[in-house]
Amino acid sequence: MASPEEIVDTSEIPSPPKNTYKDPDGGRQRFLLELEFIQCLANPTYIHYLAQNRYFEDEAFIGYLKYLQYWQRPEYIKFIMYPHCLYFLELLQNPNFRTAMAHPANKELAHRQQFYYWKNYRNNRLKHILPRPLPEPIAPQPPVAPSTSLPPAPSAAAALSPALSPMQYNNMLSKNDTRNMGAAGIDRRKRKKGT
Image (cartoon, rainbow, N blue to C red):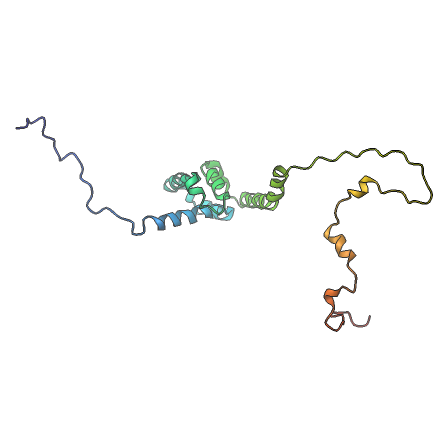
């Protein structure tokens, strides 16, 4: 027979709740809602809306923003389409940034900076990724006696001249471009009357 010291009082151990909530879709709905919300944070206008409506003064909402930082882990980051949302999520951890985003001027500044980043991203990235070829040294040419019958040879600088810009190509097109001609050879471009 067991002594009274060996008997465990089961009244102190909480029993598991009988009505445990089971998500019917295995958490898919929650995943999609959090993904949609976090990607909305890539929009400075939405962050401004949250600041204007005092969401950033609610401690529960600040806790939710801290909770959402798990999206920065590699197993979740692959689902993010707008990576700026993670940058703004990081900035929203700072109370000064949350306060500043209530002002329209700061919203516009963030929006402009984001636009310029997108506008120049490819060019800036290519500058660092693609190596530039070294210029080839020009071998000195032996001196040739000038003759009056031959034109001067083009210099190496002229041979390496940059390609024409699209505007220069436009000027090279003739007025009778075949793209504007019909099957019978009639010019279909509209002309001003009286000329």
